[in-house]
Length: 385
Image (cartoon, rainbow, N blue to C red):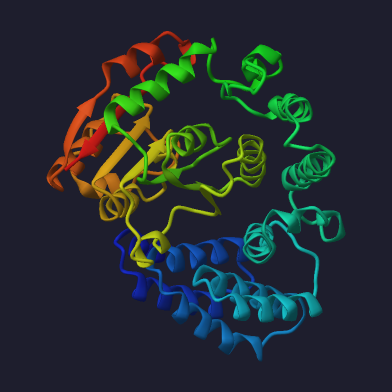
């Protein structure tokens, strides 16, 4: 297993995949969740979904019951990652016919296939497929989502009073300070302060003004917001005229931000993507004028890989992160970084400089962050070339 991890970290995906499949054949009683996680990681980092699908085809005949069911779902998921709707639908239907309870091992890819095929509408009836074998956290989130979506259908968003009533209800799960149609902000409603990282409502709007001052006019620009959370910065960019792709991997955030965009009437300007920041963004050949990676990079488990993806996707990148008093001597040390480890932000900045970027630190952002004990030490840097 250590050899497989090393090959992945070294981005030697072909050999890593061969080693993983050999390991799977010889150790079928081992942790299947870990094996599946590594298989997904190899596929998403290499972008070689066709190879994975071909290998999975070979396993269908040799398995039955739950294993066969899981393989069919995996094939549907990988087809969804290559945007092949008909193939995704066909294998998802085959999975449904061979249906076994969704569990913690496959719940995430099940959600991603549902969203790909049915968008958020597919979550309205999650009570029909949610199971006790799924994690309690996800079952709880799906219940909240059903309540929110049912409530949203009962309000007329064209009517300001009804829309504000719904926003009041939605605000209990947000932690950014959104301006409302009646002149209030969501912080004024009270409940939001419990969720927020911020101690007072002016902080977030001040930070948006800093972003605007760095990147300039957004009208007509293509912007990617990685880890869009409740959608605040995606919303502000869309209202400023940008064409926004909002990427979010947590289902409850994904749904809440969708409803926020609906409240503001910008859902057609924002392409919401449910999933991970992976090689797909590069393989589609699409580049962005601006990328926002705010409070994101310390979540990367392969930071070198993801930073290089950012470099391939845009010449203008805003990164906000916490910092740590640690020094990485070389790229190998960076490759060992995992979420939760101390992050050498100086190394991150130097990595961009080596790629030809200039860097500008925002002293205003640092000063605002330092007002709040929970936010001290956070920094914003604008990289451009």
